[in-house]
Image (cartoon, rainbow, N blue to C red; front, side, top):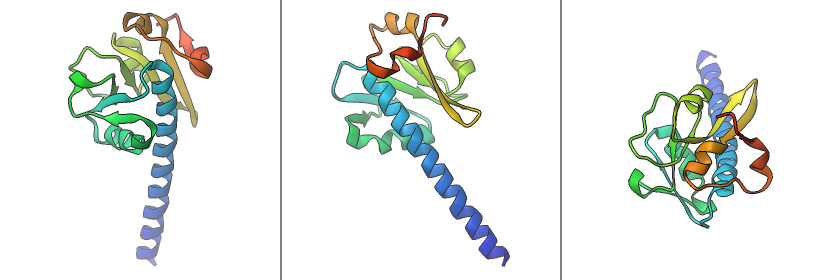
Length: 141
Protein backbone atom coordinates (compact mmCIF):
# COMPACT_ATOMS: atom_id res chain seq x y z
CA UNK A 1 0.00 0.00 0.00
CA UNK A 2 2.88 2.37 0.82
CA UNK A 3 4.46 1.67 -2.55
CA UNK A 4 1.20 2.49 -4.32
CA UNK A 5 0.84 5.73 -2.35
CA UNK A 6 4.42 6.73 -3.18
CA UNK A 7 3.91 5.90 -6.85
CA UNK A 8 0.71 7.93 -6.96
CA UNK A 9 2.42 10.89 -5.25
CA UNK A 10 5.28 10.70 -7.75
CA UNK A 11 2.92 10.62 -10.74
CA UNK A 12 0.88 13.56 -9.42
CA UNK A 13 3.99 15.67 -8.71
CA UNK A 14 5.38 14.87 -12.16
CA UNK A 15 2.13 15.93 -13.84
CA UNK A 16 1.95 19.15 -11.80
CA UNK A 17 5.59 20.01 -12.56
CA UNK A 18 5.11 19.29 -16.26
CA UNK A 19 2.01 21.46 -16.39
CA UNK A 20 3.82 24.33 -14.58
CA UNK A 21 6.72 24.07 -17.04
CA UNK A 22 4.27 24.07 -19.93
CA UNK A 23 2.60 27.25 -18.65
CA UNK A 24 5.98 28.86 -18.04
CA UNK A 25 7.16 27.99 -21.53
CA UNK A 26 4.01 29.45 -23.12
CA UNK A 27 4.31 32.70 -21.17
CA UNK A 28 8.02 32.91 -21.87
CA UNK A 29 7.36 32.38 -25.58
CA UNK A 30 4.95 35.35 -25.56
CA UNK A 31 7.47 37.50 -23.69
CA UNK A 32 10.36 36.72 -26.04
CA UNK A 33 8.39 37.14 -29.25
CA UNK A 34 6.88 40.43 -28.03
CA UNK A 35 10.41 41.87 -27.54
CA UNK A 36 12.19 40.47 -30.56
CA UNK A 37 12.12 41.90 -34.06
CA UNK A 38 13.59 38.65 -35.35
CA UNK A 39 11.44 35.70 -36.34
CA UNK A 40 13.92 33.24 -34.77
CA UNK A 41 15.06 34.04 -31.22
CA UNK A 42 18.23 32.52 -29.76
CA UNK A 43 18.07 31.90 -26.02
CA UNK A 44 20.82 30.91 -23.61
CA UNK A 45 20.09 29.19 -20.32
CA UNK A 46 22.62 27.69 -17.93
CA UNK A 47 20.17 26.32 -15.36
CA UNK A 48 18.80 22.79 -16.10
CA UNK A 49 15.17 23.82 -15.50
CA UNK A 50 15.55 26.85 -17.77
CA UNK A 51 17.13 24.64 -20.44
CA UNK A 52 14.14 22.33 -20.20
CA UNK A 53 11.76 25.24 -20.74
CA UNK A 54 13.74 26.40 -23.78
CA UNK A 55 13.72 22.85 -25.18
CA UNK A 56 9.91 22.88 -24.94
CA UNK A 57 9.91 25.98 -27.19
CA UNK A 58 11.99 24.58 -30.05
CA UNK A 59 8.97 24.39 -32.37
CA UNK A 60 8.05 28.06 -31.81
CA UNK A 61 11.02 29.76 -33.51
CA UNK A 62 12.85 29.96 -30.19
CA UNK A 63 16.12 28.09 -30.33
CA UNK A 64 18.58 27.25 -27.58
CA UNK A 65 22.21 28.22 -27.94
CA UNK A 66 25.18 26.92 -25.95
CA UNK A 67 27.01 30.25 -26.05
CA UNK A 68 25.60 33.25 -24.23
CA UNK A 69 27.52 35.53 -26.63
CA UNK A 70 25.34 34.25 -29.50
CA UNK A 71 22.03 34.63 -27.65
CA UNK A 72 19.41 37.29 -28.17
CA UNK A 73 18.18 36.75 -24.60
CA UNK A 74 19.47 35.06 -21.44
CA UNK A 75 17.24 33.19 -18.98
CA UNK A 76 18.50 33.60 -15.43
CA UNK A 77 17.01 31.53 -12.60
CA UNK A 78 17.03 32.71 -9.00
CA UNK A 79 20.54 32.57 -7.58
CA UNK A 80 22.23 32.18 -10.98
CA UNK A 81 24.67 34.75 -12.29
CA UNK A 82 24.93 35.87 -15.90
CA UNK A 83 28.31 36.57 -17.45
CA UNK A 84 27.14 38.18 -20.73
CA UNK A 85 25.96 41.70 -21.29
CA UNK A 86 22.72 40.61 -22.95
CA UNK A 87 19.07 41.30 -22.10
CA UNK A 88 17.84 38.89 -19.45
CA UNK A 89 14.54 37.41 -18.41
CA UNK A 90 14.71 36.63 -14.70
CA UNK A 91 12.35 34.53 -12.61
CA UNK A 92 12.50 36.35 -9.30
CA UNK A 93 11.20 39.86 -8.59
CA UNK A 94 14.11 40.78 -6.29
CA UNK A 95 16.54 39.85 -9.07
CA UNK A 96 14.54 42.01 -11.47
CA UNK A 97 14.88 45.01 -9.18
CA UNK A 98 18.65 44.67 -8.76
CA UNK A 99 19.94 43.19 -12.02
CA UNK A 100 20.75 45.95 -14.56
CA UNK A 101 20.44 43.49 -17.48
CA UNK A 102 16.98 42.22 -16.48
CA UNK A 103 14.56 43.58 -19.08
CA UNK A 104 11.73 41.33 -17.91
CA UNK A 105 10.62 39.15 -15.04
CA UNK A 106 8.25 36.22 -14.83
CA UNK A 107 7.23 34.77 -11.47
CA UNK A 108 4.29 33.15 -9.73
CA UNK A 109 2.49 35.21 -7.11
CA UNK A 110 -0.42 33.73 -5.15
CA UNK A 111 -0.77 31.00 -7.76
CA UNK A 112 -0.94 33.41 -10.68
CA UNK A 113 1.67 34.21 -13.31
CA UNK A 114 3.08 37.73 -13.04
CA UNK A 115 5.21 39.48 -15.64
CA UNK A 116 6.83 42.90 -15.77
CA UNK A 117 9.15 44.70 -18.15
CA UNK A 118 11.48 47.60 -17.41
CA UNK A 119 11.02 50.49 -19.86
CA UNK A 120 14.49 51.89 -19.09
CA UNK A 121 16.28 48.58 -19.57
CA UNK A 122 14.34 47.77 -22.73
CA UNK A 123 15.42 51.15 -24.10
CA UNK A 124 19.06 50.43 -23.17
CA UNK A 125 18.98 47.36 -25.43
CA UNK A 126 16.89 48.99 -28.16
CA UNK A 127 13.91 46.73 -27.45
CA UNK A 128 10.19 47.49 -27.50
CA UNK A 129 7.26 45.42 -26.28
CA UNK A 130 4.74 44.77 -29.02
CA UNK A 131 1.15 43.67 -28.73
CA UNK A 132 -0.85 42.68 -25.71
CA UNK A 133 2.10 42.57 -23.31
CA UNK A 134 2.82 46.31 -23.66
CA UNK A 135 0.58 46.97 -20.66
CA UNK A 136 3.15 45.20 -18.45
CA UNK A 137 5.92 47.73 -19.15
CA UNK A 138 6.81 49.76 -16.07
CA UNK A 139 8.81 52.96 -16.00
CA UNK A 140 9.58 52.50 -12.28
CA UNK A 141 12.44 50.01 -12.83
